[in-house]
Amino acid sequence: MIIDCHGHYTTAPAAHQKFRDAQIAGLKDPTAAAARPGAI
Image (cartoon, rainbow, N blue to C red):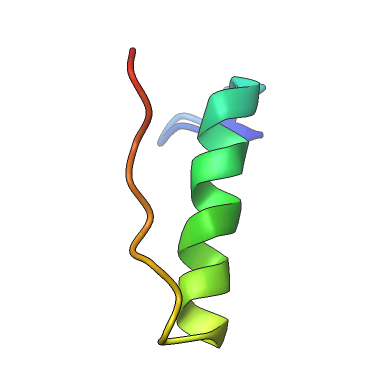
């Protein structure tokens, strides 16, 4: 879920969550490859 500065919210696309999960995994394991955004 994404919440803007006015308190409105929306759901994020599945590709966004996949990218965020890869970023978080990189924080837990520094040897993991850096997260790269997919094609839009």
